[in-house]
Image 1 (cartoon, one colour):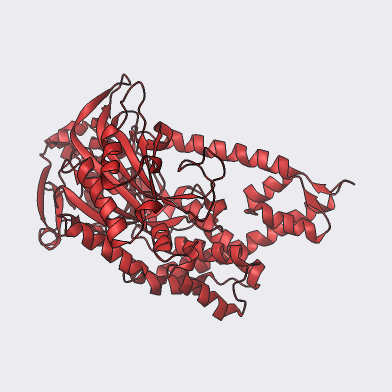
Image 2: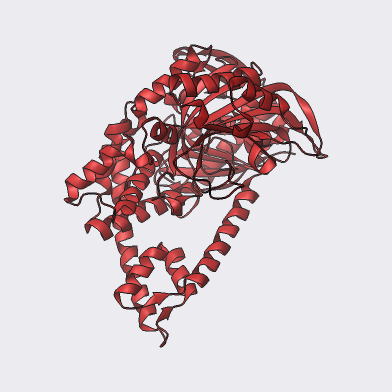
Length: 590
């Protein structure tokens, strides 16, 4: 089975069962500061999971492109990827556990031909706050799974949410493929074990509860189902291979590398081959996203830079040359049918990848010189200090394996224990930073952040009035304290321009204009002059939010009911975000 066949099979299966297909959203989540990238299919649907009405109804299905960055250093094994495709279906207050579990079971066993005895599932075991999910347990037994195939786990394994401190949450049931050829690592081995015997393929989340400010839970008025299945893993299982790199998602890239370099993949270079292909694929999708991220030293741009540079290092080490741009062309050709934005942004992708490659060539040379200096300072023990090895990693992007290789060439070694201590400290700091980001935005859907969302529409309209209609939104980020709005413009705004923009927004606020929502086709929205920031992500029917005289945009919501709710608007800062993109940070009244 090919990837395209699996995408089609999944979409068609759920469409036949009353679901409406929605296109993949951007890799950069709108107004959600909790994550740098879209990490699951539910991210673009948060407003609807929180109660907003979706224009296409209560049953939805899609294939969502996603990026998860926590496992970058693990890429190179059989299954880890930073970019992946999530097959998802949703019930927005429609069906619940019986239908969800039955459809998942039917698709896996009857359409993908996975034997029932190769499945294992996990169910929430309950605790002092929420009872055991006996309904899900009994439903799996009804489908024909034995008691030995159903595992009970706590919140760490089988609970989702809330996205913020309070909000929708609930138990989930996860579905695993039992690799029967791999023996149990211990008597207690089960789906929660990381030994590789059990491979997670699908997660069905049942949003049944609302977590309240006092820590208690109450039943939700709108109960939702949110599911996600990893295309890469399921494709490998369906094709009977033990690695996602042995599917048609990666085989064309692997063949292209062999043709370009004359060096075929082998057991000795397999890990480097995988890293080069996987990171180039992810970088191509990030660069090809409509929101036009470029390599930088902050946030999404930093992750993009890290991926490109890691791939370049391995490319130069294995092939003696940088092959990323040519390999990116293969990614574009391979995926453009499913994701046409890649072909549309081909020139931008190649140009930015070449630009970053040229910059890194200089950094790489500097890092090698610094490494040579460290080696020349070694004491009689001939061991490179772990702090210095970490500095090469943190400052110049040298992975520890690369530093070890350089040291081994000189008959030296590296203090790996100290390096890993520093590395763990670095990871812990990163996690704390991510947790600190997990406040506000669409995730908490508070009144204040909802008003800030409306403020971005007014700001966008004001910028277009002052600077012209070539201005388009390039991204936004909302926290509980402020809004951040990125837009296309090639120079710094003058003080007079900023003052005019601010005056227009405040004028609209003072007029207390109703914020009107209407549902219509994309074509009708364009006829009415609504701004469609990222056309390719919209379905057949969209919501258009209009603030008469100031803004009309396609958007999922939610919004303030009147502009007067914003009270006031003040620009804090205007700065460069990246080439051709400016950034404004602003606040509204309390």
